[in-house]
Length: 71
Image 1 (spheres, helix red, strand yellow):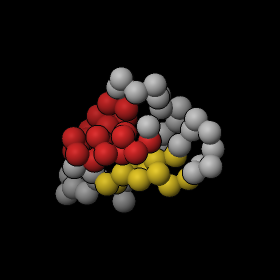
Image 2 (tube, one colour):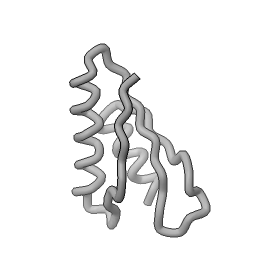
Image 3 (cartoon, rainbow, N blue to C red):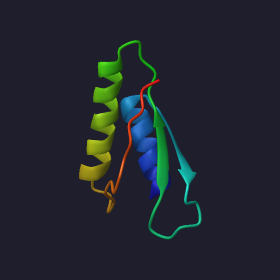
Image 4 (tube, rainbow, N blue to C red):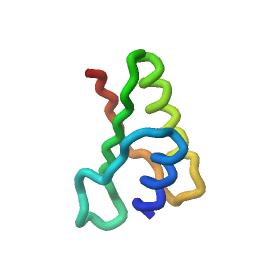
């Protein structure tokens, strides 16, 4: 299921996404998502939409916690 989410999000939102931790954990995954933009508000909107898509998708998955960091 993680691979399907990663593929779908990457294709739909043109962001970089990968499983970055908890590889051996059963029924949990830690995903890292990166968006490059010259407008911080645009990047924040894209990342928020990605979170909403994952949480509201047909996958039996939900977002337990998230952190958005702008560099």
